[in-house]
Image 1 (cartoon, rainbow, N blue to C red):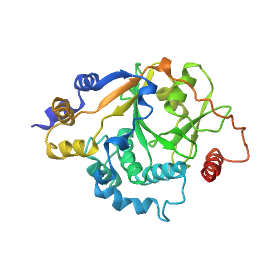
Image 2 (image 1 turned 135 degrees about the horizontal axis):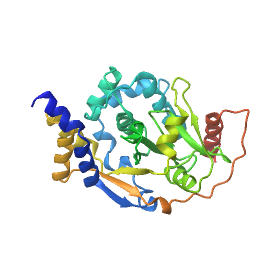
Image 3 (image 1 turned 180 degrees about the vertical axis):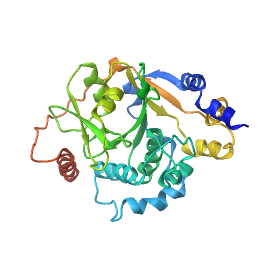
Image 4 (image 1 turned 120 degrees about the vertical axis):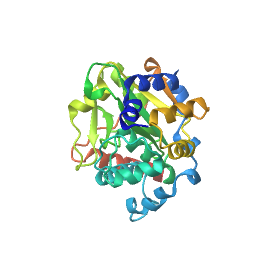
Length: 295
């Protein structure tokens, strides 16, 4: 297959829209609450390269770390060691190697490999996407991010790996879940984001364009079996990625994009934590998590 035709099939917006529509479906935050990547991807199905790299992230082990600390540590290590670049669309084993070799990596690639590191470190994780409907070329491809369950805080927490940020409301230091962020956005309440990695620059305008414009809709990626998708991506590597995903769909092995109805989102009723200006936000949250883990 000539390079020009292969590029056309991979990048053509019509093919992307067709695939997106085929795997998309309506849902609710209640239906997606208990869904997670771990359910379809047990530890023994994660490629060995992730186990080989894991000690480089947790050089002193992870037994004494809270879920929030583990989630942050993985995200920071990925961003500090991967400069990013073009989208890869490769199997998870190939993707992490190429990313570490400086051969590319966009937000969806970061989310993909982050999923696997979370699984082997006993973190429940979800992968989300953002569908942004506007004429801004900077947000044409949307965005990918993750959500982890923090046992110490007893809630889901957004972790944007590519930007190394999470969100919190103005009257609380507790990090937000996707459902909570969506509710606050709909109610036009003030929301802040915190950069937990000083080495990574996140432009406020870019965050605003992705998360807070009126027609930005989150969707959860469900039924994603990494072992199956990796198999197809490896064996059919000679084909354009869009065609491989089409074959996944036709063979009944495809994932789904679940779009929760934004009007059904609600903010969990949790204690409001007073601001502590002398402490950084992440340090404050880690103290909360550590105290709750003792109780």
